[in-house]
Length: 291
Ligand SMILES: *Cc1c(COP(=O)(O)O)cnc(C)c1O
Image (cartoon, rainbow, N blue to C red; front, side, top):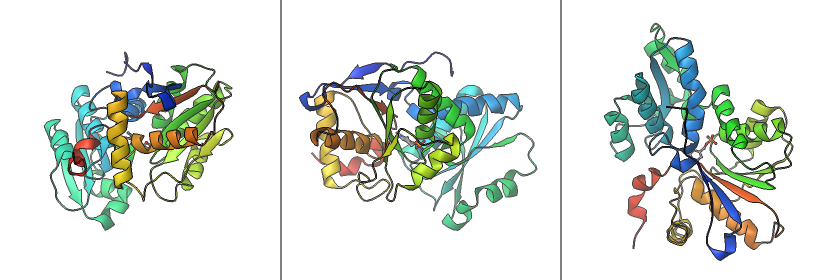
């Protein structure tokens, strides 16, 4: 399952950005999407090594990580349970989780904060249970994401990625340092107050040279999608023939386009954007796309 992957590199088409390349991790798998595939790879290895057979994890009701975990567990023959933040709801993402056999436990926001306590209360005595943090955040996840660098050209000047927790960005930066590349990593946090991402990355890499964080492209905060962003998404998809998601990759591409239009790069600079997937997120926001 985590061996042969399809993640080609495509050139964008629109004249304003036709020198930009995109690493298509969105094409790896429709359900174990993009960076979630990268993050789960060594987590599932560890589960097998420790001879566990039940993954317990955490996420919001529209979490790409939950769908990815449910799908990966079903394929690997593992059980999966998720603590879902908030009141009982049903939506497209949770339907997929259930189809893949995931057991959902809706959890009020206060209890949800203490994930270790939830795990210990419900599964503390279950010897087959394995804890996976929200979003898959872990050293294993960072390790999986470093491998992206090995699949890219080594002479990239600017590499872009979107960030939630910063785990993916940490893996990329680690890969850049390990290979002693000149690449600058441009991280676009999708949450308000994204400066904390630098500390998160530092925890994993111990070095934040070559890291640039663009904190002004959150559009009001996590999963906020004002009309300018929705219009941007519609135009981008029609121009490029490539889907982008409303929560992560659209904010990254918007930032990249904005920096290009402000002449932040030299003409000959080699720019790559990492498409981290998450395309199912469109269905959670389908009412926003009015034509
Ligand atoms: C989860 C997710 C991210 C955020 O990854 P982090 O490692 O938490 O920063 C980025 N893009 C997409 C599409 C995602 O689903």
